[in-house]
Image (cartoon, rainbow, N blue to C red; front, top):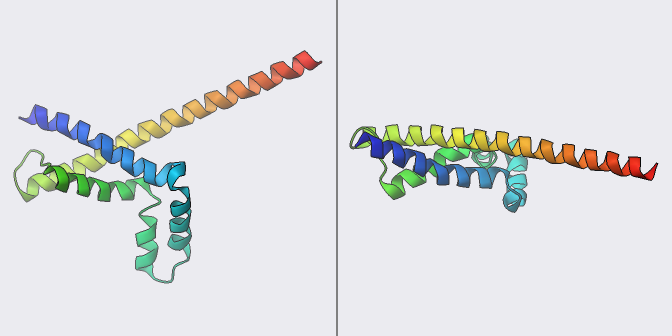
Amino acid sequence: MEYYQFTDLLLLALPVACVAWTVTHEEIFREPRELCVKKSRHSESIWERKFFYLFTCEYCFSHYVALIFVLLTNFQLLQRGVTGYLIGFFALVWIANVYMTLFGILRQSLKVEKLTGNLKEELLEEKKQD
């Protein structure tokens, strides 16, 4: 039974990571995210600042996404009941954040490779022109 729970955990963390990353990093949510950054820095109320900060931090936001997925899927880990929900929730957040960290590293290395390739192309073009 634990083997299937572990597999479920690894699979369920994928959409949690995807949603959290997309909202906090991708271009499609840039404008709302910029508004949230502004409000998280300049709002009068501490509660308002903290609320808007949640939409700018993938770690923070992943907790809320994980909570939604745990409730939607009735995901419990190792135990039944409230304890199983809590263990599943925190494990799901942790695995989702591992996925997001690995994805961030991968994207950064691809960006460096692309920039290096563009720089090499520019140098070759300059040499051809000389």
